[in-house]
Structures are given as structure tokens and as C-alpha cells.
Length: 212
Image (cartoon, rainbow, N blue to C red):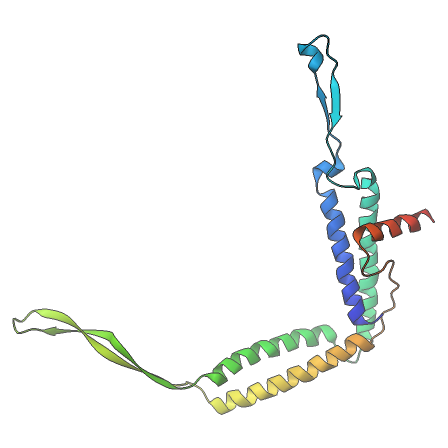
């Protein structure tokens, strides 16, 4: 498999782990509750009756196997991590660093693009200002006036535009290199079950292999 497929399978293993853990995190699944109705105490002719609570999962009788399956998935995840690390080490680039660096480039580029798109503007705010004056009687009163608001950019647009173009070019080039690495790399890992297998199918495959 290549790195792209390995990352997808990494997510698959985690989703199976989450589902298994969800089963074990529910007390109703990992315990058996017996409710005995003590009818004989109130009616001598009646018999006591014991009723078991219904389990919340179809795997109620396989809880120990589910726990073992979780540990197995954890081991598989560890093996896959090691295989991915080995594949990354064989690349001619530090993939993790480049991904992080490219994310920073793209973030800065978004800021520079917003700055590059800003334009100087002028607008009239009708009645947007207030002031005070004295009337004929000598009393101080407030009044309203229009406000002319002029907005100008406070930076060198040429510098920002040039930097934006360079960042976009670098980000695109790095993205293309990363995409190429994802599909051409070799990850030495054999999948234990199909990536599209359901939890039930993966668990069944595990049980079958555990018997052998």
C-alpha cells in the first residue's frame, strides 16, 4: 500500500477501536443484572420470578473477546504507525514538517490575500458625528453633523502582492510534491481485513484468525 492508503487504514483502525471501546464503556454491556420479583413475600401462593435485563449490544456474550479485539487493534495500529514512519523516512523530504510548514504558508497567504483585496475608500456618514455649542442664551447644547470617513491602506501593497504570489507558488509546489509522495511511497504493511469491512465483519475475521 502507499501512504495515502495507509492513512485511510489508520482511520479505519481508529474507528473500529472507538466502536469497540464504546461497547465496553457501557455498564449495561459489561455486566449482567438480574431482577428478582419477590412476589412470594406478599402472596404466599405466588412464586418469585427472576428476569435478566436486556443487554445493549449483540456482543453481550462476547465481551472478553471484544476486549481482546481492542488490544489486537491497538497492536495493528502500532505496526501500521511503524510502517508509515519507515516509509516517511525513505522519502526525499520531511513530510510532517512540510505539511506543517505548508499549512502556515496557506494561513499567511489568506491574510495577505485579504490585505491585497482591500481598497482605499471614502464614505459620508450622515449624522454620524456629535458636538457641543452654546446657544443664544449661553447654554451648552449638542448637535449632530455629517462625518466624512476616509480609509487608506497602511502598508505597501506591492510588497504584500509579491509575497502573496510567492507563498501561493510555494504552497502549490509543496502540495504537489506531498500528493506525489502519498501515491508513490511504499508502506510495508499487510491489512488484516478490508478497509470497507464493517465492525461485525472485522470482529468475525479476528475471531476466525484467533482460532487458527
